[in-house]
Length: 162
Image 1: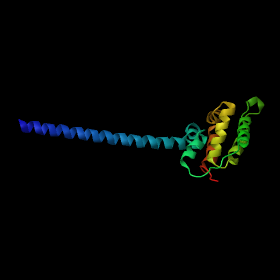
Image 2 (image 1 turned 60 degrees about the horizontal axis):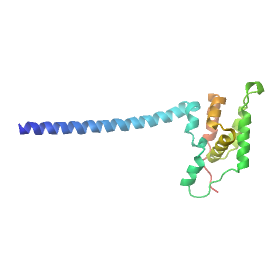
Image 3 (image 1 turned 120 degrees about the vertical axis):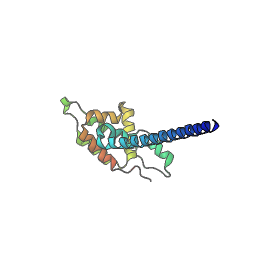
Image 4 (image 1 turned 30 degrees about the vertical axis):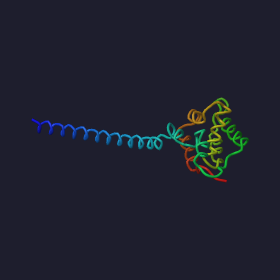
């Protein structure tokens, strides 16, 4: 009788350990799958996911970099940042005023030297116009135009050191 109880206890212990290991393995696999799907979604649907995935459009990007990067990061003057934000804002007009000027939007992003400058413009745009630049781009531009903006920004370095 004692041998039967020992065998049953060992069997239950092995079963418990086995199910725990399988659950951990499944959880790990699910996490990897979620990460892969997030990356794929950014590549496949840049209009809906790419903008938010870009650190450059994070208004706190510069603050985060300052905490991790040694050295002095080059930034835009406030007046230059304001001029870029104004150019972006003026590029978006109602259809009865000529519609959007996509070339002006591309021009602004091409003149920016790194992702820190993009973040600075996004931050000032939100401060001055009380609108998130990501939301404005999503609502005003078509998917192919957003993809073009993303390609311009993606090619920029993260930051430059003085």
